[in-house]
Length: 349
Image (cartoon, rainbow, N blue to C red):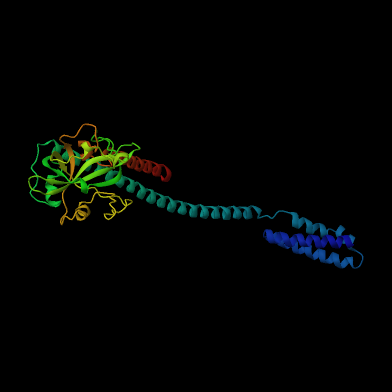
């Protein structure tokens, strides 16, 4: 009897659990109620000592059969479960599809901006290349023309019309007021108009020797860059490099190059010059205006191979960053733009 009672309780717990898992059909509900009623009768019979007989009469057996038998609408329940799962899956796929479309468009817009930027940079470098090539050709044409007369003005601005023209003058160097600008690397010689920059890759450094020059005809003072002097002989130049008599020089007026952001400021009081500034140099000499600045192209009577080393024609017309460098930059930017376009197409198509 005790065993039968425990079995009834166990089957009741199973029934409660199965009711939570799946709904019962109408036939199952009727059978379940009948079985539960029979179980109740069995428990009452148990109190009279008839529990085993109640089980044998089939009350417990009926309850187990009801609980273990599959519902008639099992196919309908499974169909509902499939529909629900497929509906949830479709809604999830729809959300993922919407999210994927948004991500794809964001990726397209981002990489399209990167491609447009690299295309712009390539075009800008190509324009720089074209501009410098044309300017170098113009400078070369000016140097190859005949000798020009010196401008009548005395200031730096008055001599701008004669930039890259060859002018022959006679006068005297004022060596006592010479200024060393640098340090600078040795000039490359400027053999190729489209090759390297203005400085060589040599390890030796030196200075540009800027010396005031008084014209014999007018007495006007110019600032002439006589060329490059190694550091080792800066303070011990040979006498033939410092002529005291009147000399004939071939000069080329040229615009000044702007100093870089990392270049130190000039200190006229201590005689430290890091870049050429005619205005500051003229003020240190007591000249009330900015004197013209010119490069010495040739110097009569100067022994060959002696210092200072004059700048060549290629050094005068070239840039520190040559056109071929801008062309390489342009090809790099255009190539990167093309790679971005191809990668974006295959990634977000």
